[in-house]
Amino acid sequence: MGTEVLMDKQQNPGRTDWTVKELAECAGLNPSRIRQLLLAGEIKGYKRGPIWLVPNAEAQRWLENRRG
Image (cartoon, rainbow, N blue to C red; front, side, top):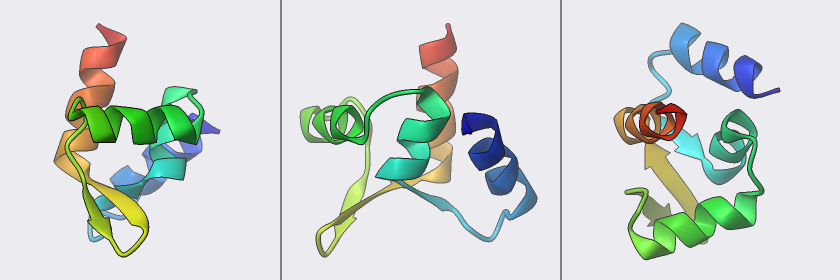
């Protein structure tokens, strides 16, 4: 499922922000863990109302660092 999200982001460059759910699926983590990382500042994101969003460049950076 994570590969589908990543391919969607690459094929739709106009969509620059990732939702917590999308990032969690791509990383193979629970969305609550992504929220914890956002709150801790380990992933840089912003809130639009109650929804956390992660800019594409930050999501790609974090995913690359996570893979080592």
